[in-house]
Length: 95
Length: 180
Image (tube, rainbow over all chains, first blue to last red):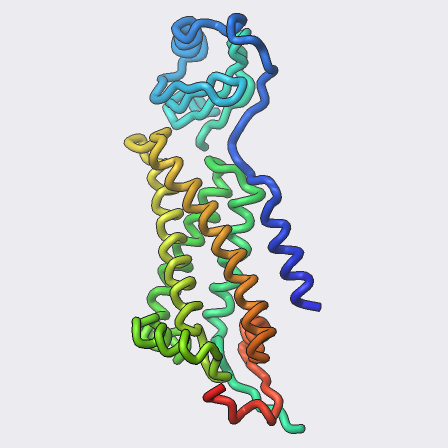
């Protein structure tokens, strides 16, 4: 029955979205790096320019610019960091 | 009993409709924002919306905005009649939904494209506009499908088949029912 199939499709609408997000381990806030230390690491070590800095779930996150894969151009990047270690958890670079 | 078939939706309308379903589903569920494929599926959606709007002025009878534009008079008479003419394309309430969805698709494509510009990259209001309008479009698609199925059942006028084949087949006894 066509209707049944369509209703099933509609119900599938509650399925989760393909949203950009990253999983960082949950850690108490007092273990988090200070925002300024995090930003220093982002700029000085990773070489990103920060346009927007925020906390997303258990991660620090930036929207900004960084070198592309080829290393010849500054492009938009969206990067998630482990807030305790400052490690990159997820990096999205525009190609 | 002899059946009568009426041609409702031309090929371009049907291709637009199902391409929109596929592109929106891809971008909503499978292709993450920022991915090249997500972006290009979005631009493709923008392109077919533009074609659909053009077809609204140059297309076949039921494709034209003039055929279904939900004027207050049409809405009033539709609500008073509470029925469908078998030869009808979008009914006035359906037309409201279709125009709103076309507008939303345009909004989603534009706000998505804006995020590729350094000026608006990471800008919260642009990001939220993009995401909320996508959620709203999906909600409206659900209402659209439920409304189609409900109206089809109550009126006895086939609505799903014409969007697949173009043709609406009516049993002979049903054809005189322009007024029902």
